[in-house]
Image (cartoon, each protein chain N blue to C red):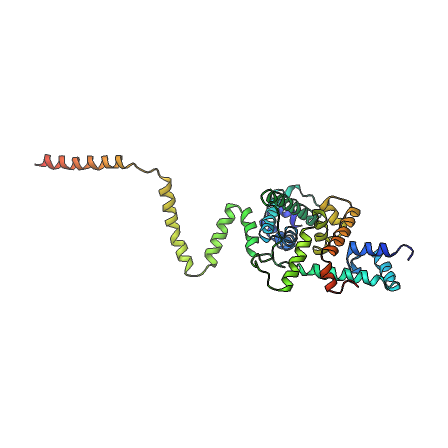
Length: 144
Length: 178
C-alpha cells in the first residue's frame, strides 16, 4: 500500500476510468484495497463513474449502413465484377424487371452504336438524294 | 489472414475486412469530428487507401486495427483542416443529422457530451476515443498516435480532467460530487 496515495489514486482514475477492472493488473488490486481503506476515495470514484455514464450517452450507430459498405466495394470493383453482379442481379431481381432489363440491352447497344458512328452531314445526304432523283428521271426519259 | 488475401486483390476478403472493422471505424470518426456525413466519407477513403496500399502493410509489424485507425485519424485531421479553412467553427452534429431543434433533455445531454469531446485537443480526443470507446489498449493507442505509452497515459488523464471540468454541472447532477 506504500506505493498508493490519494494523488496517485486520482491520477489512475483519470487515466483508466472508474472501472478498476480496466486498470492495469498491477494497480487494480492495490487500488481496490486503497479504496476500501480510505472512504474519502469514494468521492473521486463516484465522480469518475458519473463521467463514464455521461460518456456512454454519446452512442453511435452499432451497425454501419449497407449503402456505405457497398459504396466502398463498388469503388474497388473491377469491370469483370460489375458484369458478374449485373448477371447476378438479373437472376435475382423481381420477375417483371428481368425481361425489361434484357429488352433494354439491345436499346443500349443501339444508342451506343449510334453515338459511335460518325454522323453523315445533311448536305451530303441531300446531294445523294438529288442525284438519285435525276438518275431515275434519266432512265424514264431514255425509255421514252 | 484477411490482409494477406487482400494483398492478392481478393475482394471477398476485403468485404469481410470491411464487415469486421467498418462499424468501429465509423463510430470513431463520428465522435472524432462530430459529423456523420464527413465520418462516412473518411471511412470510405480509409478503406480505399487500405485497398490501394495493402502491400505496404506488414504482418507482425503492426496490428491491422492500429494501421486502420492511424490512416483514419490522419485523413480525418486533413478533412477538418480543410474545412476550417472555409468555416470558423465545426459544431458537433447529432447522429442522424436531422434534428435542428433538440427536443429532449437526453438529446441535449448527448449534444453536450459530444461538444465536450469534440472540443478536446486532437491528441487527447484520439487517445480517449480509442481507449474508452474502441477498447484499444494503451500500447495500441500509442502505436496509432506514434507516441510512448506514458504519453498516452498523460493524454488520457488530461482528457478526463478536462471533461470533468466541462461537464461539471452534469456530473453533479448525476451525484458525481459531494
